[in-house]
Each structure stands twice: as structure tokens, then as C-alpha cells.
Amino acid sequence: MKISKDLRISYSGIRGIVGESLTPIVAWGLGRAFIKFLKKRVRVPKILIARDTRPHGELLQGAIISGLATGECRIRHLGIISTPTLQQALTDFNADGAVMITASHNPIEWNGFKFFVTPENTILDGPQMDELMELYDRIKKGDVISPSLIGSLLIEGIDEGERALQMHLNKVLRYVNLDFIKGMNFSVQLDGAQGAGEKLAARLLEKLGCDYEILRSERNSEPVPENLGELCEIVKKRGCQVGFAQDMDGDRLALVTEKGEAIGEDYTLALVTKHLLEKYREYHPVVVRNSSTSHMIDDLVHQYSAKIVETKVGEVNLSRALAELLSERRLAFGGEGNGGVIFPPISLGRDSFITMAFVLEYMAGRDKPLSELIDELPRYYRYKVKIPRSPDIDFSIYVNKIKELFPENKISTTDGVKVIFPGGTWLQVRASNTEPVIRLLAESKDGKTAEDLLSRVESEFSDIGKS
Image (tube, rainbow, N blue to C red; front, side, top):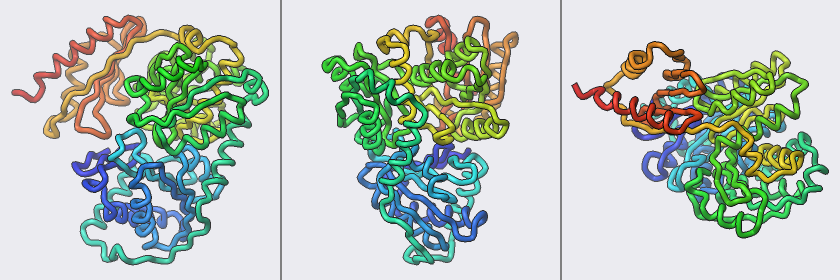
């Protein structure tokens, strides 16, 4: 995936700083490119459009609709809803594509677009995103249509987000034991980052019989421990059994224990994976994770004699792998270590709502504090850094350096370069999809081993490009 100096273009869509790299003119051009993309598949595409709560979302929404309208299409406007709600609505609304206006976990000055397509029911993959950006580049170079032109546009529904929310809620409730969870009367603190997922999360917690309150914090959207201090304090003060933290578009979930500890997003996927492996054990499930996700998942899969599939980093890679397994009539689920769980009966995208429901169902079934359930999971230590990457240095130089450093170990080049050591230790070096950097990640059951390994590699890389 290429990196633009103006916009960040990746498997997660397109993002930029509003008023700088991302303007209404850019949004118009992307809308025109997307309608051209869709019309190669369908004569009159049916498109869903929604946004998160960022204040500039409405401006960008009008601009991208104007771009879409340069080709004959039908648009359903779903208003402010989460990305998972939009993605599951692709099927319910019989759409051909969708646009989510969001910058996900990026700071508030950012915004962007996630593009979805059917019949895959996923965000665009690498080749599809390349095709979209090629169309956009041609438009920038002199497409003969003025941004003021409104084409043959039919808006079939205004603000149908309420119906999408209800359908999403109904789907989530279908896959958990509602009465079982309600009987526990869990005390929950919700921090939705004042984002698009807060409304549905509140409805879900109410349906699950939870005594909940909403924290409307001004935190950075990304639900990592350093941003959850206020949530941790309130969970402990209120005596809650769990705190839930979403990002602004509602596809990721982080957990805070009853002790007021933010445990890190890796544990969200691990906890849900353990629960689902137990719940669906008789179906011999397959768990799909990306190459950077903690090997806690591997340990759990082996514990339950299940199967694991590894993909490249990028939500769409997980989604497509899960879709292939479903076509083989396998029961499969998975996710990423950033708190993104994918449960295909809901959709092929990350979904914080089914994740909340599964966490509460697991807590109800085990009747133990969340901190104890976390302590039962395999324990790994992870360290990661990123180093600047000059565009003049080919990534293969880093790969060859790793092969020289660790010639006796198992090495995979499926996604960057990954070295597997005895005893559960591993190292990955990968070129970022969104920044001009190299990402280094080491994980081990011993913290010092992982830290020392990362330091050694970082030191070896420091001389690359200096000669």
C-alpha cells in the first residue's frame, strides 16, 4: 500500500488533517472516484453513508455525497452510527457499497473515510484501494466534471440510522444468553470517547440488565491504557465490575478491571477467544489472527485443540480469511490485538458491541472478578518501537539483516519478517502501512528477553543507510 505525503492511505481507509490534507475538494474527488469504482460493478449502485461524531464530519459528508452524485446512484443516509453498525447494515439494506466518515482512533483534528464493498461485505482490500486511488489521481489531474455538478442522485432514506441500530442490537442479543447475563446485574462504566458507538453501547448494556453510567471524557480516541486514567478512577470509585472503552467509531474495545486497571487491548481478544473456544468447542472452531497479535491466542487455541490461521496485518486480511473459512462451512472467528474482535455472524468487521456482550457472558458463566479471569490467561510481555524509514532504503535490507542476525531460527516473510524462537519468544519487523517507519515488535514469556531482543535489533538497524 502506498503512502501519500498528503493523506494516510492504508487498509484502514484514508485519513488526513481537516483543512490541511483533507478538504471538501478532496472529499468530493474521493466520492467521484468511489462512484466510478462501484459503477464498474453495478449500473446504479446503492450506497450507505454514515459518520462518527467529529464536528467536521457533516461538512465532509456533504462534499463526498456531491462527488458520489456525479454518477447515477441511490444513497441511504444513516446519520451518526458506528462503523460496525454500518458494516452489518450492508446486508440488511441490500447495499452495493458504503462510506464511513471517520478517522477511527486518530486525534480530533483528523478525519477520513472507510470504503466498503459487497458482495465481500468488507472494507476495500489492497488492490481495490489501489484502484480507487488510481481513479482519484486521474480526477485530480483533470477530470472534466466540476465539483458543482450534481448528477442523477436519489436519496432513498434520510437518517435511517435508527433502523440500522435496532437491527444491529437484535443481532448481538441473538448470540448471547440474555437472561443469564441479566441475572448478574453487572455494574459497568462505559467510556465511548463521545463517539458514534456510545448510543448503541448504552442500549445494549440496558438490554443486558447492567447498572451502567457513561463517562463522556475528552480523552484521545484510541483506547490504550495511557488514555484511560479517568475511566480507571471511576470504575474503582463506583465499585464497577468492568469498564468498557471504545474508540470513536466503535469498532475497538478495551477493558478495565474491577481494580481500576487498564489491562491493554490484547487481553480483549484473548478473553473473548477463550470464551468462544469453550462455547463452541464441539464445532472445532478456527481462530484467525494477524501476524502482530499476541501468541496468547496460539496458546489458547492449542489448549482447546482448535486451529489457528495467521494473516497479514490489516482488518481486511482477517475478514477475507474468515470469509473463506465460512465458505468451507467452518465455524470461525478472530480479531486483532488492538481490541478488535470479529464475529462473522454479526459481520466481517471488528465489532465492540458483540465483544461487550461476550465479555459479560463469560464473566457471568465464570462468576469471578475480571482481574482473576485475566490472570488465568497465558502471560506474555510485549515491547514495540518504530524507527524512521528513508524512502531510499529498500525494506529488503532490513529483512536480510534479520536473516543474518538469526540464521538458526524459523523465519517467516509472510508479513515483513518474523522470527520464531524456542519457548514462545518471537520478533517481527514490518514496514508500516500508514507511516514512513519500520515497526519492531518483540514478545516473550519473559519481559527481559523481549526487551533485550528489541534493543539488539534496534541497535543493528541504526547503522542502515548511514554509509
